[in-house]
Image (cartoon, rainbow, N blue to C red; front, side):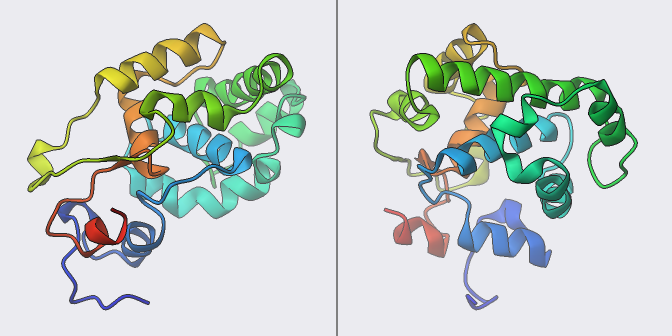
Length: 191
């Protein structure tokens, strides 16, 4: 485990869940279809809430959403959706839960007609992580031209909870952009 005395991005704070996520996951390039789908769903679930809330619920999300298997989720019926809405271990928002099913269906259509979600998402950064040089958290944008384009494309394909801000958070979390501040020890590790 990384020393707690190392300089980290200021958003990370000291919560062990956040620190572990910051040190091991945030900004690391992800190309795995299942992991990209999972992060797309979790970023959407986070809308209007803090990311720490989602991170703390993530193990339970993985369990009740069949390890984010889109083939299984796409077949969820009203009974399964109601069961999820009664589960305090997840964010019980009907639109978000139903959106997860819609996103699984959209994912399967994409895969059937064109190919991989990874190819679709990574095209917005030309297949390579964008290395930003933010000195402070205040400089980091909430959305970009690329996240606007990604959002538009995903919506066109039937995905939901994929606004530009959510898409940019996804880009940060899966390493499409390196938004660690330049004084953070992870910045240079991910360059």
